Image 1 (cartoon, rainbow, N blue to C red):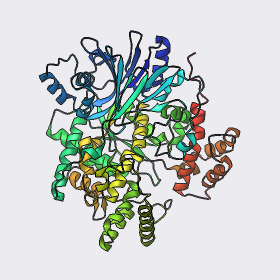
Image 2 (image 1 turned 180 degrees about the horizontal axis):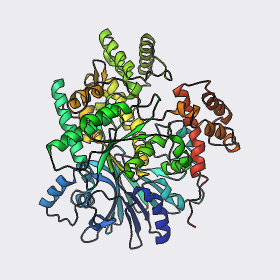
Image 3 (image 1 turned 60 degrees about the vertical axis):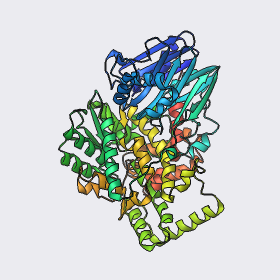
Image 4 (image 1 turned 135 degrees about the vertical axis):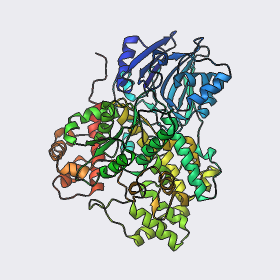
Length: 615
């Protein structure tokens, strides 16, 4: 929900609005700008979801005007907090979660964030202390950037609102490292543009007397819980947590739906929504909206499974064929809006949320986070170390791993003995040499207690893959003014799953065993017990060899590409891409890696070559 923006000291209104309007897509419904004395200007672009009236307008101040807030996000448990605050004497003028957040801060101070179940990036100005309190949610679902330029402190939901304040836009000193470490830079303060920093997730901070100080308020390792020893009891507890997470996220004053891939995670989410709606009328009644991206006749198409789910639930699905040529002309604009680098083209993801918005839906409940909590993509193999050389357990892990792989001839097959021996030798060497300290929290006592797979999952959930995907999906959806809610990322559920042994996360040849057993009553068994996993990505090989072959060829032969300072060895990359285009190669990994190497060039054209100044 929304976009926030602010400067200390205040900024002239017309220039401030010009910069604020750079993020209009995040909040197309209305905007607000407020100067507080000469100290600060706060701005907000609103995407109306809770309390659609003017009472939910931002910036929002408390009764005596001491505190003023701008919020991007949602506090899902706001009704429970509102009841608690009312008992403490607080009155409310709106039915919005923003007012609840503001009064939570007034009541509990900076510790209020520990009471929130939600996603957020917010700033609260204290007129008396003349200080700004800022916070970003536990896992980084909502973005927040800041910069100090010519003595002015600037913060914003997206970097593009900061661009107009920068005299000459340049790439950062860390650009080369970032483009070669796509999954590692999101959890750092590093940004692609020089002079801009990323506010860390799971942190709060105070800007006062010209200085920003931050403090980490959340570490999942500090919030592990006792779990039932019985697997059946674990299933019941997980089901209860997941259903409650979905229930809270179905609170909305506008239509909600889901981006349905046909995979387990998104299917579990819409299945839970359907179950909840049958048993309680207090949730959103307008939820029966499933949006499916299709890639006909490519290895990436999962639409038949999505159709099974919608038929099973008795709801209509909106099936949208992804035709890249229809949107490819907007590629540079999409890169400007996206702001960052990634390994695959953003077209399919942007298109699905554009379709969501066009069909009158503003909120989706999606399945993000489950992969990183339970299976970790190819990292599932990390469980081999936990098998303790038990042949039966070893085969179980390898069978489970093999079952997740795409069977298309665009992907390599695995050899069990080679995979096992290679992994064990490398892992033993790393541990012997002390090079297995992969997490920033490797010294935490509870991290040391985790099994090997759980350590891997902890890292990709908190430090590498998931933070990157959260950033991506925030942009994909907010480009069209759509909010994504993620029940698998409810902090109660995350703490529970991190407290489980690897045997509860996988087993009997299945990844995400716990999810499957918990959600089995709600979705088709063909989906629940399906082993193959594709993932929502682009069929890049098919596109390079068919629909987009001319574009790729023209691009890598252009003078601007061959002279680009942002691409490593343009001539070598040209050769790799042309091998795919001319069908000399059809390896998906090579094609995707080639796209990743090409993206800095497209990003540079979209961002560095753009005029960001007020006319």
